Image (cartoon, rainbow, N blue to C red; front, side, top):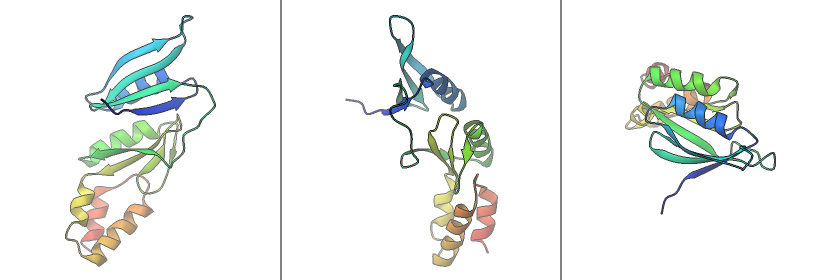
Length: 149
């Protein structure tokens, strides 16, 4: 048994899969299903080893921010690169969130956030979280400065 994330698109499944696999290392398109007349129906792909199925189902359903994909980045350069690629044509949101040009919501967060909060004490942790909520793209160095007062 395998669990995969299923994403419903309105005519953009192949474009989205190609876009996403171009952003994340260790990503690839696994297969594309088509109707007899050549129209793409599903694209199965991996992002950094996680399997996704993109379906061209038409306008019946739309994405909402109630479900988002979480990207754990190890460096500021990685955050900057992933953020720029996902935000291109999309909408930046608060606290490291964005909605890409296909309507998919993402959280682009630093792995360092857990370290900044761990053992920080209640006041320092509150400062860090307040700073996160006040940012769009997360700035690790600014969060470290806020934690340290």
